[in-house]
Image (cartoon, rainbow, N blue to C red; front, side, top):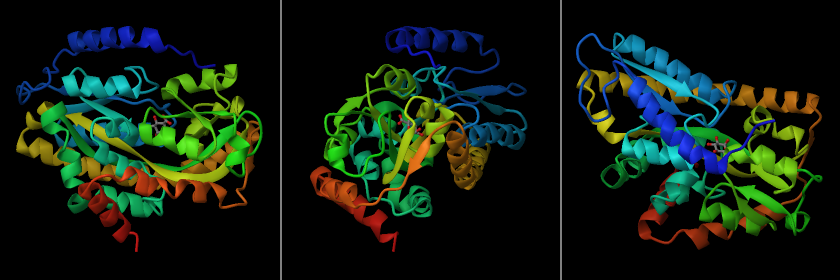
Length: 343
Ligand code: GCU
């Protein structure tokens, strides 16, 4: 069983981040410019997934290739399993420079700039290929990715797919909002996703990812929504064995980096960093489908039941969210640009 730790984690993480800064040896502190000749700068990357997750695999590969491409001037250490904190905390650590990089869900960035919410809406992406095309198109997302630099010292390097998200429960399959009535559905900490859970008929309970296993097990929540990969790698199938393919959303993770750290790289190293990042998201996208198939097979072997959705009731209930959440011309333009590339 995963242990959970809401209160303790904030203190523990602060201490861990301080300790890591103190121990990083050759690593120059964030924002201090280029590393001295012959030294290696270790970039610390915070991740809330397990080591078998495609994000861990692809990002570890990123570090190895970066080290090779920069002749050892930079390397990346990936800290999995929320070791450096839950995403809301690591977002803050990247901003203050105590952690260099983190994977955070789009729902976290929506809390800093509501425009990110456009990409968290159900129906914005038609497929993973469509999503990754949009997320890597500078014309579509360039301004968005730079929008947190001045305010938060955070640069968005790019996106990774979370794949299709579905609902899983402790109590049985769901086919329509009525099936979730009176049930507590865990959601990410986002206004938009709270509204999404309510539109799906549930009562929304926002919780950090690492707290979910215990919350499902103890009955704090009755249901959750995520992709099959996290369902399996977080072992949620053990405590919520009914998975229904609602496919209500294709979610997005972002890799964020401290902007001063990035600005401190030489032109050559930064070019290598960006080139290896491109290879990383491409590899991640390639790994995703196989990881999904494997996760379903293994969760089934572990006792989970996968149910097909046989009605459009959830899609119909979620459709009004687009109008409800798009508030500005810029958000509408972003939504339209992404939708246009689906055709
Ligand atoms: C996915 C996603 C994570 C996110 C999680 C969640 O697993 O990749 O970044 O934290 O969903 O539901 O919290």
